[in-house]
Length: 130
Image 1 (cartoon, one colour):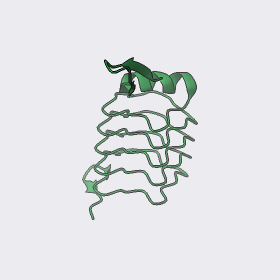
Image 2 (cartoon, helix red, strand yellow):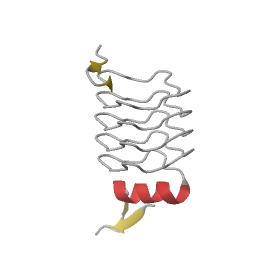
Image 3 (cartoon, helix red, strand yellow):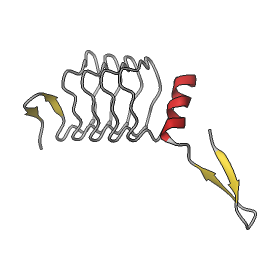
Image 4 (cartoon, helix red, strand yellow):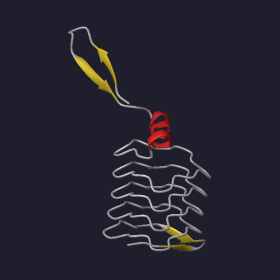
């Protein structure tokens, strides 16, 4: 959803949707490509088989969320709370999981080709560092 606002010179400039508006789009359509979802809280929500390519979940709370079978190529999960998230059968190729907390994440058949995992926490007391 893009709204246009006309300035004094008669020109139009696009206004980017807010993260909350992007969550609404995702919920209604099952996709939100290159969406700004920074700092959203989707704790416990179910979004199976959705298209989130190039979305930005930096600092988001995704604890206990279900993204099974989703296309999440090149998504940013930097510093996200991903505890107990279900990413089974999801494609996270090229995703950035730097410093994400993924303790208890379900990762059965998840694709991580080219993913960035610097500082990701996979279990209490275990953090991957470069």
